[in-house]
Amino acid sequence: MLSKRRWTTTGAGAAAAVLVLVTGWQASAADERTPERGLYQVRGADTAAARTDVDRAGVDVLGVRDGGMEVVASPEQAAGLRGQGLTLTLQGDWDALLAARGGGLSRTAAADFPAGDEGYHTYAEMVAALRETASAHPEIAAVSSIGSSHEGRDIPIIKISDNVASDEDEPEVLFTCNMHAREHLTTEMCLRIVERFTAGYGSDAGVTAAVDAKEIWVVPSQNPDGAEFDIAGGEYAGWRKNRQPNSDGSVGTDTNRNFDYKWGCCGGSSTSPSSETYRGPSAASAPEVRAVQDFVGSRVVGGTQQIKGHIDFHTFSELVLWPFGHTYDTVTDGMTAEEYARFESVGEEMAASNGYTGQQSSALYVTDGSISDWMWGEHKILSYCFEMYPAGGGIDGFYPPDEQIVPQTTRNDGAVDILIANAT
Ligand code: 0X9
Ligand code: CA
Ligand code: CA
Ligand code: CA
Ligand code: ZN
Image (cartoon, rainbow, N blue to C red; front, side, top):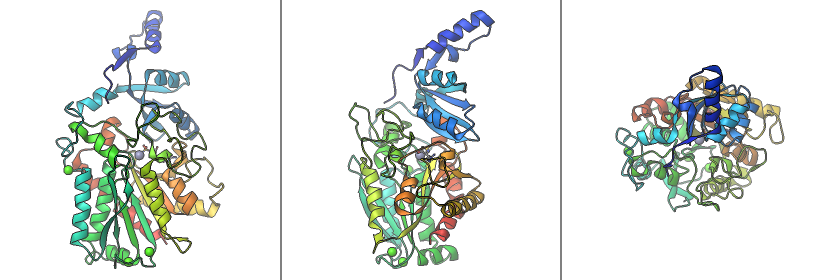
């Protein structure tokens, strides 16, 4: 999938050459030859509206921190953003950075993550880990399925509770991970939750109380096709979306723009199939989204939604985000002042525990069709989006070494406990 033609001479490059003549300023090679997909640091997008405009330019927003953005942009997009007065600093050629991380092999199924990152779980390893957990703790853990991905992979879910085989009248909590393919650290986050609430049962008092009082559901990978594609051939692809083919020959829907609540309402997603934030041809057109929506819908028992709290884990930027994402308004249709205050207070408490920054998700940039807007808008579930480690980091931001798995997932133990405690 990596482009062969990586560098193009652009109008911006020609303008730089003219500048040299006029001012004597020395343009670097990077100024004259702009990568087809360049990794840029963007400065000057200091308001949510400005960041939403950057997102709407169609660039791939990797992370946002303290007003600075990291994006992957075409030469035309970069020129357009500079034309809006933003400062773009080229960090490198995205495709070259990706290629440098792998062996350049053909994209066949990988036995494991690239050398040095084997501590991450492939799809097969994740499925095996869930099965082993359930067979080691049959009284409190049971694996089932919420459906299949586009390519037919099962999307497993594990339930953790006392008397796990019975649907007891206990508040339910949901954790979802790996919606975006390249955000592999999040799969490990869900597996950490599974590990902690099973291995710690009977010895850790807090864990035992939570498992006895609640029903905890965990979906470690909402996008198994994308995750497998991202590591195929022993080389990271930097892939974000699912692997559903589009009408124009491109591949992938951004499932975090495909949920069926105010889908496509507000300029927070793209209608262009090749965009990294393509919303899909219709709401819930992605089978992975339907699987999550149908599962959550199935937890309406006797007219009452059983799931009370939810975290969807993403990377990166170290943020705790709460609804709504489709509007800058705090109070709006579907969100009272009291409800917003609760989101903010639980969100800030979680952010204090893990050292992330807490904010309304639209304060980052506007999105529509995101999972947390749907969870709250449709089901009144206290739903957060976490952007995990690191705070920033370009391509490396998606691929921290596996030594980071333990520190960065245990870092969220306290936040997970706070969410569970507030799921009432
Ligand atoms: O854009 C997304 O889907 C999430 N960020 S990511 O880099 N992991 O893709 C953030 C979604 C949170 N919602 C809003 N920012 N409105
Ligand atoms: Ca592995
Ligand atoms: Ca129970
Ligand atoms: Ca129940
Ligand atoms: Zn994400």
